[in-house]
Length: 146
Image 1: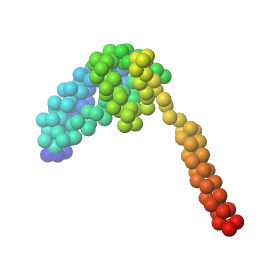
Image 2: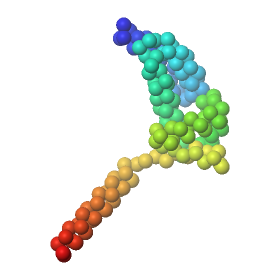
Image 3: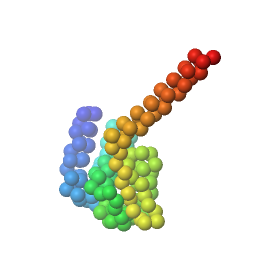
Image 4: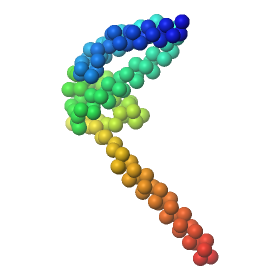
């Protein structure tokens, strides 16, 4: 029965969720409401429904923000069919937990993406390891000089 529940949830997901790839974000959010109520009716998946819906929202927000260097909060809110305060609060929560690579400019009312690149991450790793190595060499030099 657990397999049937998963199959039913998958069917609901595929049938009731417009493809975010088609950039129909407001329709996607409306479909998430229906999906959530369907997931909550299933006794096996109900306990995971909140997590699943949150992950869907994070993925869709990430997809939307990937296309922009910065976007007005109002523009993004209207694209998703939600209010600005709701979107601001939700994005803030996801940004604070490092689930979205962006920051919110409250004064300008903008969401600014900051895409981490691999070269920058590698650079910081090399610098950090270099500092550790240099500290170890200095400690060793002090021990040898004594």
